[in-house]
Length: 163
Image 1: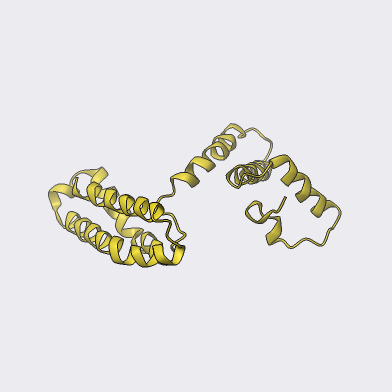
Image 2: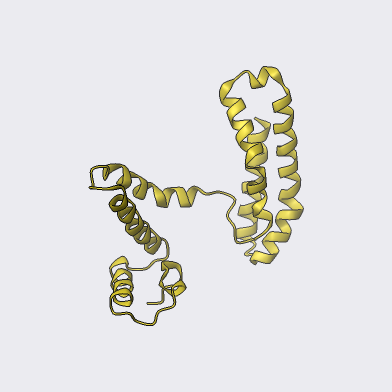
């Protein structure tokens, strides 16, 4: 339960940073100062759990502890960039329709066709995330591709698209 409380502290810090309207650089520094010690306590607790045979007898606890240790380097990426989110919930919510569609398209004809469909739907979800009309974006994208317009490839991504 203590680890859950520590994670809650990390999210409270993020809420505080948003409330204070800090820049990404300021968030990065605040994370190092306030969230860093929390992360170290979490790491210490997980390592201690791995050494406790009674706790590790529970398969789900063992799986969670091993996952945390195996992902620790990636978890620390929040200290590299203040713009990085500490949670991937938003990303998972945006990808859920794509994943569901991929499952629903199992009889689409081929694996390549399913991947292409998933790609198009991920573009549409990216448009929604960036408040872009998907129809306008796709029209622009296809015009650039079909008519060989001199378009910067990066500018074709929904996050860089200018209406």
